[in-house]
Length: 503
Image 1 (cartoon, rainbow, N blue to C red):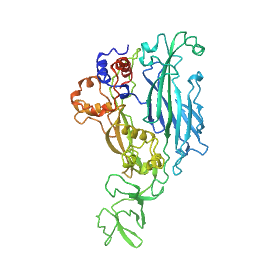
Image 2 (cartoon, rainbow, N blue to C red):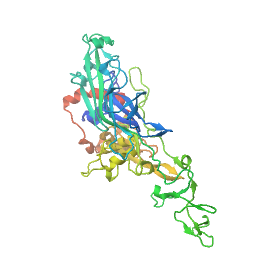
Image 3 (cartoon, rainbow, N blue to C red):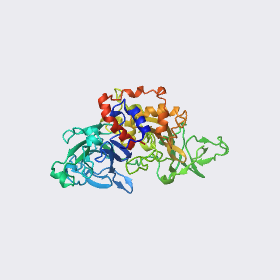
Image 4 (cartoon, rainbow, N blue to C red):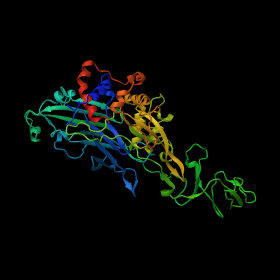
């Protein structure tokens, strides 16, 4: 058994015993970057765990820049590093080849052209994918007796199922099957009387999209003499605070806050030069620059997820973790509020437009037709939509904001940073528990917006938590309470799963 760590069993039991499986489940779908999703399938070799497979939408490009999907609706995808190109016409097609038709992956897609004012850059995907290791992962004894009690009584017509509607309608299924002279299983090398476990995930209306650059982002052209200023002192320069400069006899004059000179003396001070133009002599507190996009616009961003704890520690031959275990780790997730890169649309989901007339939050992946969100959401990246959905579920802790892009040293786009968790209970435990531990200090030590600290508790830290000082009431409404019989039958599997996957 892999649960030979008494401390971990104790800690996992304390947390998992009172709650149903829905409280701490890994998401079936998650974004790894703007155009790539990771889709979870129950593993045939370890059916209490997911194996994640990558599906990426590949944007068409001209001169290295993203362009709209062509009218032919021909779209390219990459599934686990293999590229496929076909027409998105709602017809179901094979996604790659399989050892046998019974585990053949299938995909269908439709290009979203519902908004004529938005370039086609979004695809709705439905697919059914299988764990390919079913024939090579065999069991001498019934899997429901030795590795996973949830497989008891399952079959292809009555599988065990979990669902996740965070990003799309997704369901993952698993079932066991014995080779009783089954010619298909025998033909694939499965011994007589041996057992196998099938894993399959079905997804409908998964939204994959990409951002098309806005050619009219700046109110001037390459090579123009321009100036920018934070006129309203809000820390963010908008396009209304950028303009072309006035050509003068001795250079270029910024129109912002320009004032008349008297006897060639600038009333703003001796640092500012008076310039003659159109019969006037004026000066400005702002400097003109030649606009060359590749050098004028600079990034001060950091890599999202760079400080996250990865599930990449050393394990022994029995699968036991030899590295540091972290409990209830979060993920570094970021979004852009309104700024020049988003067309001044809020891609963090914080403004009033993200709620319908009844006060309910709008689904960022399927906003209502005709809504302002639907007309502007194309400016947002896939992982930003995911973050909005996670925030709507109460799974994220706000860390802070920072400037990610500048022009002439002035901020033109900000980002907000969050630590997001797999469950609301995980977020609550982190928010309530961190300040009580010396390692995190009273502030919780969430790091900075550019380098957040979303790590979980070590087993030793978790053991030191004083639950009498932690208010868990916010999470009670989201927890499915099981009967004692259900809790007993699933406890060992939960501990095995947590031990294998927790960071």
